[in-house]
Structures are given as C-alpha cells and as structure tokens.
Image 1 (cartoon, one colour):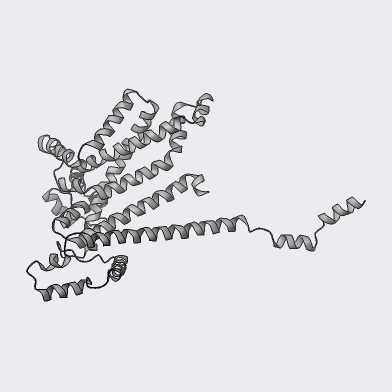
Image 2 (image 1 turned 30 degrees about the horizontal axis):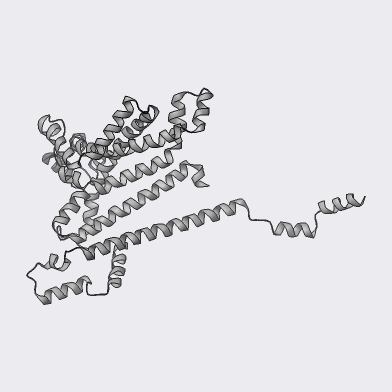
Length: 374
C-alpha cells in the first residue's frame, strides 16, 4: 500500500509538476528559427567581410601599380600647381586609411569614378557592357554543363575504356590549348573559309543599326531582346555571331566540368549503396543517373558555379579575339589606356559576381541536400 500510494502521489499533478512544466526546454520550432537566424547573421557578416576584403585588395592594387592617376588625367606637361590641385581633388593627399574609407563609401553607392577612355561614369560603362559578357558566359556554361556532365558520367561508368580515354584527352586538350589560338583558328576555319558563322562583334553592321533603332534594349542581351521583340532576322544574325566565342568558352567549361564529374562519379560508384542497389536488381541507368549522380550534385553545383564565375572574369582574351563588346574587352582597352578607375571598378564588379555565385551555389545545395540544411 505504501508503494502504491507513493506511485499515485508521483503521478498526480501538483506544484512540482507545474514547476517542471515551466522549466521545460523551448519548443523545437523556436530553436529552429533561432538557428536559422544565427545562420543568416553569420552569412551576412561573412559576405560583408569578403566584400570589404575585395575592396581592400583592389584599393591596394590601385596604389602600388606604377601608374600615376594624376598624370593619366592631366598628361606629363601639367604644371606643379595643376598636379597638386588634381591630387587634392582626387583625395590622394589624404592619409591612406582615409582614402580607403572614402573608397569604400563610394563603392557602396556605385561610384567607381569616371573613365578616362569614355568620359562616362564607370558604373554606366559597366551597365552597358556587362550584359554582353553575361550573355556569352551563360550560353557557354549551359553548353558546358549539357556536354560535360554526361561525358563525365559515361567516362566514370567505363573506366579505362575508349570512351573514358576520349573524354580525358578532350579535357586535356581543353586545358592545354591557348584560348586566343583556338579562337583565331575557329574564325579562320568556320568564318573565313567555310562561312558557317558570323564574324567578330555581336552583329553585322546593318543588323546592328536595326537593333539600335528597332529593338527595345530591355536586358542588354541581344538574343533575349530580339526574341521578346519578335525580330527573328536580327536574332539569327546575333546567334551566328555568338556561336564561335560561346563555343570556345564552352569547350573550356566542358573540359573542367567533365573532369570533375568523372572524379566524383568514380568515387560514388565504388560506394556500398551502389553495390547493394545492383545486387537487389535495380536497373543500371537508375543506379548511375539517379542515385550516384544525385549524390554528387552538391559538389557538382559548386564546380558549375566556379566555372561560370571563371567565364565571367576570364573571357578577356576571348572577347578581344572576337571583338566582343563585353566587360573583358572593356578592361583590356582600359588597361591599354592606363584607365585605372575603369579597371578597378570592373574588377570589383567581377569579384562581387564571383562572391554572389558562390553564395547562390551554397544556398542551392542547401535546398537540394537535407544534410546541409541540418
């Protein structure tokens, strides 16, 4: 009876039970919200620190290069009074830390100075030329993914076979051949000799005038603008011009993506879950293209994002060879003209795009992989 009464007293609600309820741990939903909030704050702090680091690097590069911005503006025949007045106007007579603070403030508001080459604000020039680079890099990345991922998967499923050797040799050639040489050979063969593609530039002269006066520039990307406007003649001409430069960049993207896909897939195809799926009689295509490829999507997304960012920043030679009026050609002309404001502003834009693409890939594989969300 004593034991029964003790058990009954423990089970009955009372002051002790109420106190225990008050000290209960927080609900799982509140804990999840708190974790997400901390993750978001950490992400914002990391992004801000990275951007400040990018600004610090470009600022220091602008100060150590052997180019005097005052002489680039005034010329070598400027008097001492003019030189001193220009230095004061540019803020170069102030302490270095104060110059950097002003530089960060201006960059945060989109003020990258005025281009010596075009006499326009650098941000306006970047808005004008960046869509051409974005269009070129996007098409090249799409082609690189559509060709590189299947090639890497097929090579991984047949290691040592002829297919594997072909994929590896093609990838090695993509890393080895200089982009300017490949671009010139492509122009010589497909444009000069065969006439299959358009020449340098984004459009022929006649179609460029038609595009300027007849097509609303909604995005700055010719293929999208002409398709939205229904100007299919200009669209076909623009497509013939973008085939070669996009193909050259797509080749390099495909070489990188196929190599990394092959490496990831070989590792996954050797895992125990693949052997178990095959023993249970699962079709080989499902084992390879659903389960194994699904498990490499997280690192593969990072590889694709890095490849896309590299095309955005590394298309300088390609745009120079094909006279493609994008950011790469703009940076090249600015360097040849000692236009450091344009070079540094463009570098910041490319670096910011690189950071944002890495952030987008991080968020994307968090959506794809539940383990990353946990």
